[in-house]
Image 1 (cartoon, rainbow, N blue to C red):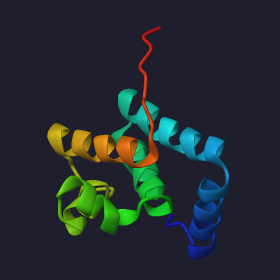
Image 2 (spheres, rainbow, N blue to C red):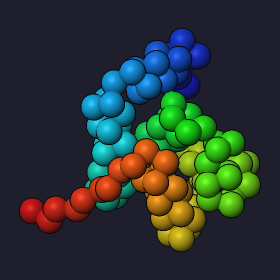
Image 3 (tube, rainbow, N blue to C red):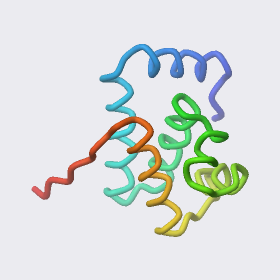
Image 4 (cartoon, helix red, strand yellow):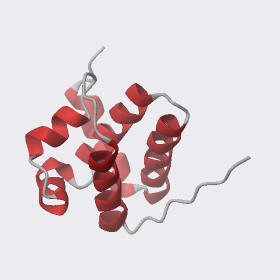
Length: 104
């Protein structure tokens, strides 16, 4: 079920006003990917990009065309590892995030 515009605007407002929520959303995207749930990870990452830097700025930061980035994070997208790492690196730098992995 697609998200409504009102819901997306609510998420964007919350991400911009609540740094803890912003970090939690990014963390959930990364954790989903690491757990093997690529579909959820991509969906969360796409929502995160829309609510933060936007695809236009992400294009500038990565050097990857905006349409390619959108396709990469779409439900049918299949990003290569180098492309995905480039997106994550750009988001980390843009939001001054340093992800840490802990093996349990």
